[in-house]
Length: 351
Length: 81
Image (cartoon, rainbow over all chains, first blue to last red):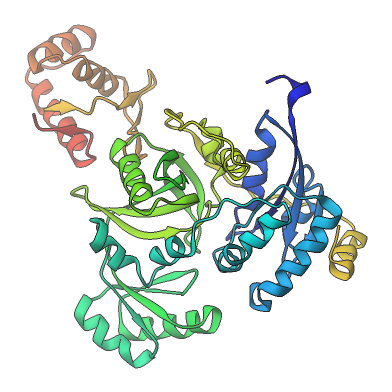
């Protein structure tokens, strides 16, 4: 496509918190900007004033703060209506687990005012939820570690007896701790409860090599893209700080089987623990792109740009190959800005 | 014993297993042995080529070869056929 026929687009993206436990927004934006089919204006949507993506050069053209998910869909919708009246948004890509429910709920309303999304349905979103994942695996033939959803710290001892130590104590949305004793499990329970609320999920510990897959489903059961990655460097929060693309057809087949079983619509990440005898246990399915999504772009499958095209109703052919052995290495960088910038986003909710 | 066919080995002896992302370093002899295994050469053929290229003490080759293969096994780089 020549420069003159590039499609003018305005895409709004959340998840600008490029911190040590990063949101995917900045990586998603980089992918969209790399796509030569678009002449794109990016609207960043932030929750907090110190999200680095607000200030980074060449990422967002304009940033607006939006209300926290707890404020509800009416508040979110009215804020987005205002932003849309100024910016004429074509597509919104939400990138946080905690905000997805609201965005799924208002996706029809957004469509009515001319904003496209490409999100899973509420049923798809719920099926892969941590609390439903084991049942989902049983139904569709996936290996999932046994788990138990608990609402009381006193339930821990019984569950631990059933699963045997170590056990994995997981928050409702994010974070997990491997506990080797009841005391460690109780500490993790209280910490996760304070941060993310109840329930807490206790999961059987599976030992092996962790592999992640970033994938994109077209909503009709077809896999547009699937790229497996192994973390090479992991932060103390369990996040990948470096990773490498793998060549393993069985992993791509697993992602395709998941997409086919759910008719998944949109981007997602499957976290897999592959045991030493090669069994792939699905540990979690994140219903949005992972923070390392730019690696898929580097490996030749631009998942964020493909999602934009799907959201606009365009037909997207499935990718058939990607570069194996492509690495990403994240880094920390001190960005210098002025207090006036911080003041604008803090006081006016715009920058 | 069969070396994994998708294993990438550079001239400098850097080994990358694209199935699980593991990487290793070996010396020139190790890199040559892996290259010959990938070409499907038998133990005798590998012994002949390595002995022709490097100084190998009599009887030492088999011992070092077995040791090397067991390391490859430990790291899931070879499989039984």
